[in-house]
Image 1 (cartoon, rainbow, N blue to C red):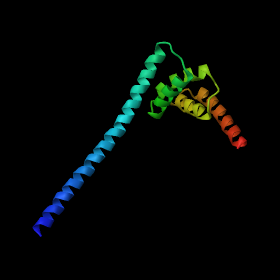
Image 2: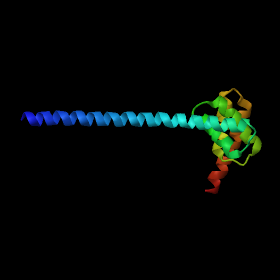
Image 3: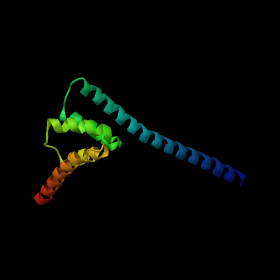
Length: 127
């Protein structure tokens, strides 16, 4: 009987430790993803500041800051994006408008939001 109790305790400890390690690993992976994403944004930013301009790159930088709730930084890159093209999906108009609101540029944010609303209506009508 003692053998079974001892075996039961050893198995419980092993299972608990294994589960605990998996939880720690999962948490560190999630933290790592965020930091890797931010490092990527910084790399794109350095490339852009050296003079390289790309619609795709500005989308990635703006989205990176927007999704990490750094809207003041997102404004700059969405502004660069919109200066290159206005043929963007409606989500970019929404994100740019929200970013502008966060820095107090309400008039421009409202103008961009009107374009977003128009694009959204047009998209619904096509369906």
